[in-house]
Image 1 (cartoon, rainbow, N blue to C red):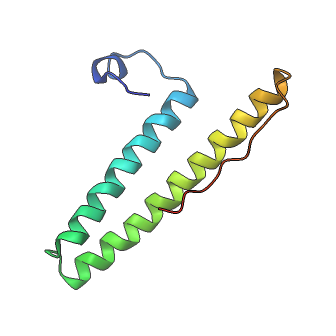
Image 2 (cartoon, helix red, strand yellow):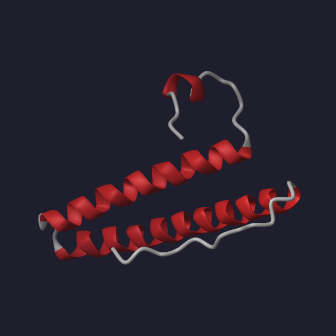
Length: 93
């Protein structure tokens, strides 16, 4: 889901689900930036370690958000009588 920045900053309160999605997307963008910086080879050892630590924290945050979303999807399926849940498959990328 994409967000219009003008809408988000317009003073209209976001639901907790919308905030979680925004936080996930922000964390994922930050994680992608860290990966690009580290792959560039321009960071020194100390900066690389700091970025790696921050990346681990962001990855954990993203995984928690994804697990929460999967749980919510399963709850919605059960609540609406759609008992045919298909487990997510991990790709071999």
